[in-house]
Length: 139
Image (cartoon, rainbow, N blue to C red):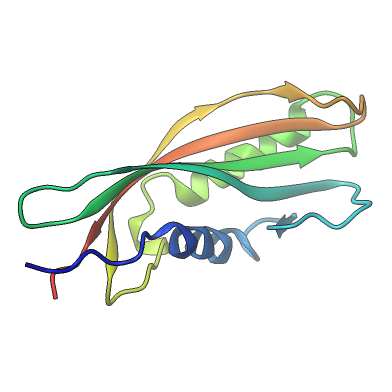
């Protein structure tokens, strides 16, 4: 039986960053520089549940990607960025490359989108959640 590997959270975050950075027309940040204006994306929170079975290990992870904008009133721009994020991630298994010697993505699905008003009235925020099912390769 294969020993359980370190959880794939950092690997998943790196893969999302590499998929989004350069493919979007906005900057992608882990830590947002202050002050920031315009539109941007952050890779946010993750909640993981073990998805183990007899003889194998895996994770069911819900991870958030946040679209932000401060350039125009209303949600139109932030929703446009969120739609671009969804197009790049939802069902795109080949785009998400994890540590090939340890983990592979079984499925990556869009779960939900929400529009939020920031305490700063100029900022609009659209968190988008995805569900990743990740299994450990047998060694």
